[in-house]
Amino acid sequence: MKKYACALVLMLSGCASNPGVVQTAPGVYFISREDKAGIFGNPSAMKADVIREANEFAAKQGKVAISVSTNGSPMYPGHFATFDYQFKLVEPDSPEAKSTNVLMPTPQVRTQVDVHNHDGQQQAKPDVYAELVKLDDLHKRGILTDAEFDEQKKKLLGER
Image (cartoon, rainbow, N blue to C red):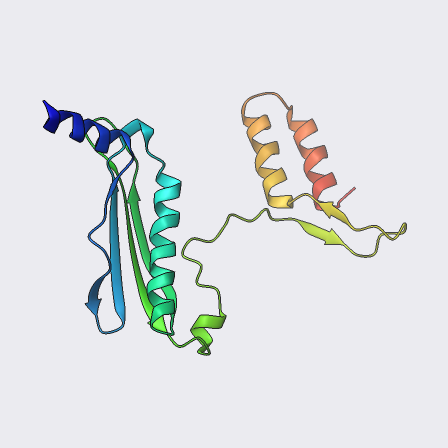
């Protein structure tokens, strides 16, 4: 009975499986973590802990940890959340250490800025292509007539 109580306490305490830092190639390391806390776990905190562990490991060797890859899976019934982090160690003064290693670019909103505005303020212009796609969709759905579509298209293209 005491054995099961200990297992329950461990499960509810949010412990995560941590085999530690594993070297996979010269200068390349891997940390894998599994959050066995289930619905009480915190995958974001687990990821932060893994990255912090990699940075501390690098700092102890006088190096900087640079991300090579990450992989994770969320918690779902019958599966614990996981996070894998592969990184390499580089010298602090190396160009890699000074640049940002972005694994996934953030989406960008395409806008144009009119810098020749008369009141001195910059105004964002809508993306012409996106607006044309919207007009075409409205036209295909029958919301805009042929004449309305042509008129709006001319305005967007500056053919007034």
